[in-house]
Length: 118
Image 1 (cartoon, rainbow, N blue to C red):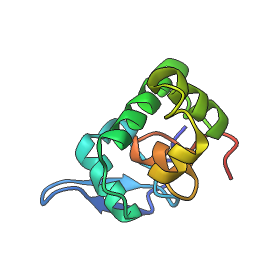
Image 2 (image 1 turned 90 degrees about the horizontal axis):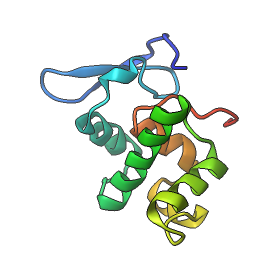
Image 3 (image 1 turned 90 degrees about the vertical axis):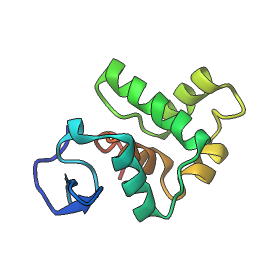
Image 4 (image 1 turned 60 degrees about the horizontal axis):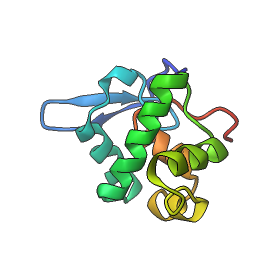
């Protein structure tokens, strides 16, 4: 579940901004749009391409089904099932979402922080 503590606002356009919690996750998950994802990615130094969007879609589908963002192992498994074994590998996800792929990808997908992630 997303926190309700607002730490700062992220400008998405000239007229729109979204509230973020202290860890950079959306306070209001329903405010997510592809433009929000691009703004969050820009802060991470990531330019979203087709490979990123594929994983974001898998994450959003996973969340819609299970009402939780997956930690790394379930994320790898979900991506592998949806996108094939070449993309369902930790190294692929680490290239796309450096640092902590499950946390970074969930943040960009507008989801809460995955359970069991530090």
